[in-house]
Amino acid sequence: MYNDEEKKTDYENITNRESRFEYSYSGGSEGQYPGSNPRGNNSGGFFRVFLTVALCVVLCFGSGTAGVMYGMKMAEQTAGTSVNPAPSGDSLHNSNPEELLGREEIPYSPYGSAGEDAYAISEVVRMVSDSVVVINATVMVTNGWGGATESSSAGSGVIIHEDGYILTCNHVVEGAKSVTVLLNDGVSQYAAALVGRDEASDLAALKIQPKEEQPLTAAKHGKSGYLVVGEHVVAIGNPLGTLGGTVTDGIISATERVVSTENGKMTLLQTNAAINSGNSGGGLFNLKGELIGIVNAKYAASGVEGLAFAIPIDSAYEVECDLIQYGYVRGIVDHGLVMVEVNASNLQSYRWQYGITEKGLYLVSSKYNSDLKNKDCILSINGISVLTLEDFDRAVESCKVGDVLTVEYKRDGKTYQTTITVQEYVPDQSLVDFS
Image 1 (cartoon, rainbow, N blue to C red):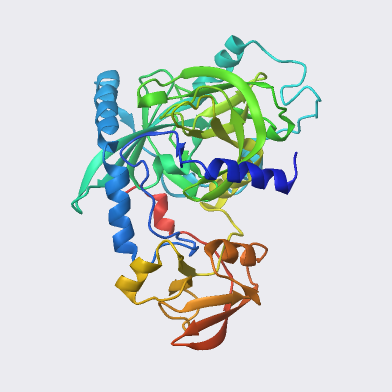
Image 2: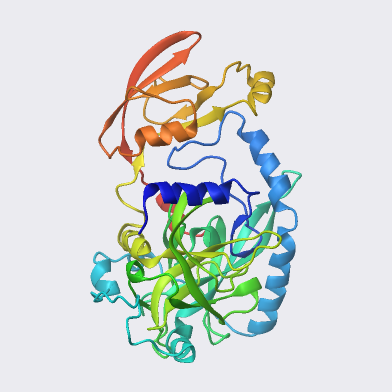
């Protein structure tokens, strides 16, 4: 454990470089994130069309090739095999996920999460490799001319219960029309249903319908909080979207590395195990064969090697329990405000397009308060001055569902005040279906 100042330094050291922190999956949907957060947080805008087009031009070109290559390879590997149908309805959720997952209390050991009874890497692989699966998502990718085309993206997942529950990364399945799961035998394919997903934690839960004659192998949860720097770990996943079941090993390089992603800052495990596109959603295991992380990213730049990251299983556990029980993460606040930050670097663009002449935080939309209007300048939240999105995040970071926010804002040169009651974020439940 280390203090907040050290975490802040880590974050600044990474984000001040050229941005090369990227999710580790392969194919068509890479980089496709919506212009605004569905929780109403801090992005998007009355300039959304301009930004969306810019992002598509920069990020979509080249993504199709990996998807096509992956699709061809999958066709070769699974030709002639049938796809087992996905589960549906009430079978997707469970009212007692803690009992379902059966996470055991693990005694603390100064030797790390595996304790003194570490196995050889080959034995760990024998124990857990069948719990790691290939995930193939069919996505719609927007091209530079405003049209959409169907493509494929590839990732990994970990079976967390024999009933067919699979944990993966949200960015692997976000925006998918359909998802299929390929078991470690390289032949058995299952259509998957989306149980739930969470953007902030970058986690998603899927479910497949197992066959009686082919029982599934589930990974056992470990305790990532017991990991120590230097502890050996094993990563298993689907690099390049074509090499399912690939095993790499390394050590834990840091236990609480704060890095920046498309969805904000995350505190992740850092490892030097080799991670490539397609590994996202795969498992990071200790030498006791316990799942201690979900691989989700790497730092890619010329001359940089061995900087890979995984979501700690301790924090993932709380999310997966909510996803399995409710389909979304409970207790997440939704203030309903979508805003854009106008600063020195973009002020001129906003002046030309929208007539905005001052730097500040401007409203795009407000879900729970009709007093606020598009292009209102937000001045303060509960008396705390806000000029940037970061200021706003700090002002609301401690608020809870049911709290009342006092919002001071400016319109046409006049200052006004209003209030917003913070709601619980509940995603569109239609997201449970890939259709």
